Length: 354
Ligand code: OTD
Ligand code: ZN
Ligand code: ZN
Image 1 (cartoon, helix red, strand yellow):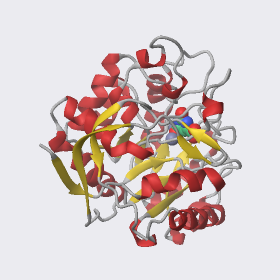
Image 2 (cartoon, rainbow, N blue to C red):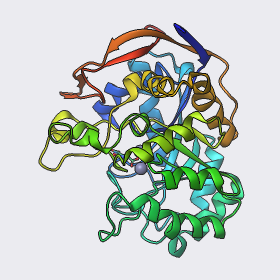
Image 3 (cartoon, rainbow, N blue to C red):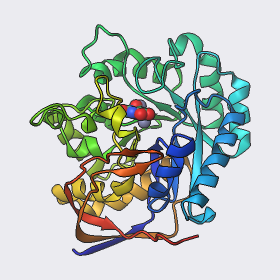
Image 4 (cartoon, rainbow, N blue to C red):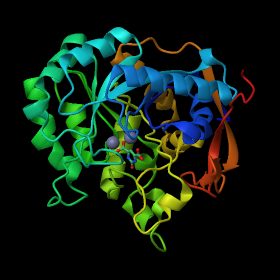
């Protein structure tokens, strides 16, 4: 096979930041994907519909600035759930027509999550009831934050402590278990009853935790939830490439300036937006399942969210392409995942669409 033309994909989990960082990265996503779920973990976080709509305008301006026509890319906004999010705020979000989900960050679980939730069923039942009633998905960063729990076990323990009680209390609530990283996460989503799905990142399909320590500490492979053992990577590949509509594409592309990654206390996050579809193609081809890529990237996400599938296409060509060592990022630079390595596929993106 030398080329694949597929329904244009969407990215169901993306960090775009704001300001100069947004301007630097948004084109990479907008040239490949038709839509993206925009994560709300800015500083301060996007907790209200009003903030989400203002942030949406920044994104649209940046898309135009990146030379991508407005109708080519739609940001699907989200709100950041806090202990104080009201049912009224959820109804306002739904009525806006631009907010598509609400994100749960357990307080302290990942980058910019200090304002997150401390006790989901203790504080957030009004918001969860409103979400369930209006059919809006809850997106979950599924890790417990208890420092006594080993960092490699935080996702598996989250299932028992938070996911199961949440879904027992709100069985009709649509839940996306974001960026699953373990066999336990993949099997929970595969086997659970009711409206539950999961996103899977390219880095968790391509690498196990050895990548963090090959020849020394490798900060550009550090993200949260952290890479796991090989058995977990294999379970994620099986989930993503197995054809189940419960699993779909979410890059979790999370840009940080080079100096903040290569640091004594480096930031978590992998930048994958530039070559996202090539990375996924690499992972699907490795298990001979390229035929399952389109459904994972372009069908299962909109089907779960209740949105139409895209009608235009994206073509990938088999062409060995070297990932750049670094990219411009405001007045600094950004190191993409797999910098300097070769990928077998390249997305044919139109760089002059405006
Ligand atoms: N993980 N980095 C970030 C977010 C994600 O948990 C996540 O969704 C980030 O930088 O915003 C990361 O490692
Ligand atoms: Zn997360
Ligand atoms: Zn994320």
